[in-house]
Structures are given as structure tokens and as C-alpha cells.
Image (cartoon, rainbow, N blue to C red):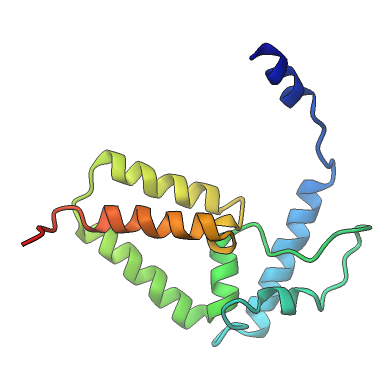
Length: 142
């Protein structure tokens, strides 16, 4: 276990990762400003992102590392805002336990720093499962 820990602790990362993420955030805000009503369409974010040049050498086209900016850029402010509002309203109406709120907090918190909840199939399915379990709380099988 100690050896494995040393391997992970000695790993180096890209020193420009924060700058790259800031560039992606700026690009997503520009996309939202260009398409505020209808967005670019579900699954079309990367097509729009590819139109931006990057100041970083070998920086591959990838989505913004924020599920909320990504969702609003793809669906637009009206549809995206309505869906987010309904989801928050639904969660508030449910009398959730602390554990359920913790699960939601984990998705929200990690969603601010990564796009995998919307772009990786496994995470997308996991989010559906988690939300299904949370929202079915108190529903009887009768």
C-alpha cells in the first residue's frame, strides 16, 4: 500500500491545467452569449468549441469542465434554466434525508470541476440511478 501511495503522490500533472480550464470556461460563456435562447443543441457543444483557437500547444478539443455551463450552452438559458429550476423545486418538495442531500451535493460539487456527469456514459447512467433512488423515496410499490 505504501508503494502504491508513493507512485500516486509522485505523479506530476500539467502545470497549465488551471489556465486551460479557464480558457474552456471563457469559451463556454462566449457560446452561451452567442446562443442564449436555444443553445447549440444536445451533444453539439464540441462542434461549437472546435471553432475556437487555443493558445496551448496540443490542447485537444474537449467540453468545459463544468456540467452547469455545459448544460446551459447545449440547451440554452430558457430550456436549461427551466429544467434546472424544476429539478431544484422537485428536490425541495421531497423531504430528503441527510444522506440523500449528501449524494446530491457530491454530484453538484464535482459537477463544478468536471464534465463527466454529462459526457461519460457510466457517470450519466449512475446519475440517473442516484436520482431515481432519491426521487423514489417514499413512493410505495402498490
